[in-house]
Length: 171
Image (cartoon, rainbow, N blue to C red; front, side, top):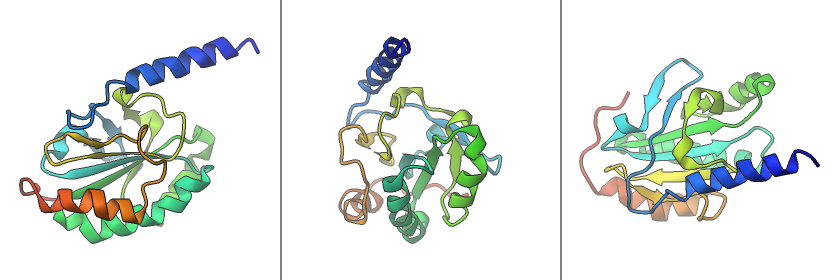
């Protein structure tokens, strides 16, 4: 019980950080180092549509949505789509997280190797954000349905891929 005030304060701080998220405004900075050692920055993705997905191995809904994210990524990555997974697992579960991600084409990073303070403290999973080619937030994972399914990918993300500037060369 003595940790309850600390937990409530931590949650309040995370929610306060997330209040800076505004649809149609620039998405907060995000930098990550993927499990393969590759450094990634949202700022460098200008011209691409980006989906940022916070997940964990123990999260059933996360694991259920990942195949849809992967299929959509495989189908649209050449059109300028980037999908990034950020796993919230504890360090002792890093091998399990890597094993899960080995089935998917999009990269993932551990939250420990990610700077994503402007996205608040994830208090529910999965948590997905969509950023358009201009770097603006299109989907706030805190306010949207928890799972980003195939239908929403088609209705929300596909139109973003058909508009805007040409994507930069893919990595």
